[in-house]
Amino acid sequence: MAPPATGSALDTAHAQLAAAVDILGYDDGLHTMLRMPRREMHVAVPLRRDDGTTEVLHGFRVQHNVSLGPGKGGLRYHPRVEIDEVRALAMWMTWKCGVVNLPYGGAKGGVAIDPRGYSIGELERVTRRYTSEIMPMIGPDNDIMAPDMGTDAQTMAWVMDTYSVAKGYTIPAVVTGKPLAVGGSLGRGTATSAGLVHVTAAALADAGVPLEGTTVAIQGFGKVGGHAAEIFAERGAKVVAVSDQYGGVRNDAGLDVPRLMEHVRGTGSVVGFGEADPITNAELLALDVDVLAPAAIEGVLDEHTAGAVRARWVVEGANGPTTEAGDALLAKNDVIVVPDVLANAGGVVVSYFEWVQANQTYWWTEQEIAEKLEHRMHQAYRGVAELARREDLSLRDAAITIGVQKVAEAHQIRGLYP
Image 1 (cartoon, rainbow, N blue to C red):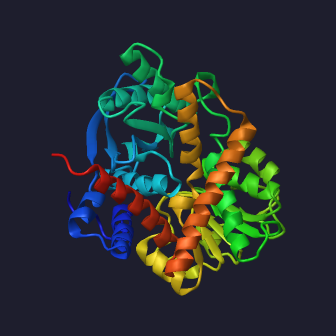
Image 2: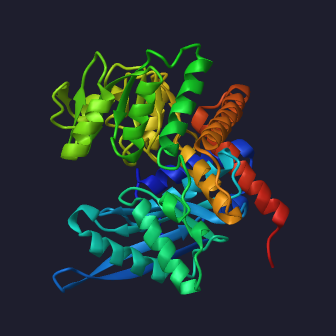
Image 3: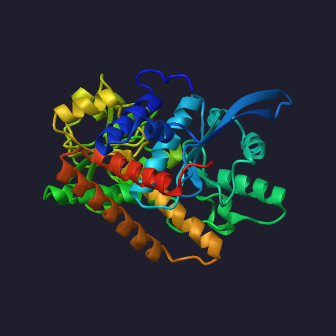
């Protein structure tokens, strides 16, 4: 593998792993094993466009680690998808599964495509061809996909159907995050957001601060940020600003989140919401609020933006929103960062529940899932916070250390073959 670009997602992931390895005292050989992806596949994805022309897209699937169980990770459609990003996301997924004690390793996939520029029929053809190309790597016992940026429940239904047709019978457990009608789970669509709010409440409680009345700004108003805003508001927090790729809106008295959601459904963006003032993404990151939740893409809090953050807590809804340099600035300014491998783990927790339900063909109630999710997220937060206090670590170092240690122990117990 060529070295990642400085400041890239993979560079950040490698630095986080190195810090955990140093804390745990592992040797260079084990560090290298933990650093390297177990398997990866690069595929060409030819697409017949609606106008009859042919376009060839690039797709990837990476299994970072499978020592604790099958690979688990999302499928991303975004024009800037490239292999180092997918490697980083797969690595973070490995530690995330360890932090919330799931029997999975980390995986990730992606296709370099802007889904907004393609019809539904074209996206279906891309998904089915991509699934066909990576089929040797995936399956309910070796690698289970889920939605991510640019993909959704319908995408997962296409993946499941393509895989099932190839095998000759229906296999719901090959993906999670699919529609209820084909074996999805109640609560999966809002799981990442609900988990983020549970962990935020736990972090605030550690400081004796109630969630009710807390001011929140959310950067990224997609599947994670939008639902998080709804749940924060329902629990009495004051969501004062949100943004998406087009811009943002702010109301210091608190946004009317239900009306904002209606506006977004009608226009496709938070921009232009009449009951708030416009704000840029950069201005949102610097607001004087209690909680800042970056819930969009990687690297938004870096050496240029992190120093302006005035929030007391940064709770990471996105994967890798803070670079190594950004982390250092936030720590210098006494900002508490609740890291992505803990804060946004609710999605993989309920994906695990969906996988279990599909394997046993018995589905739980929404209340059962909500209770199990809350318990799992609070349990994970307590483990991370206790280690951070005991060893005087940041929450990020504590979380990554827990994840790395679980995987390393599995490596060592299983041994090296041959």
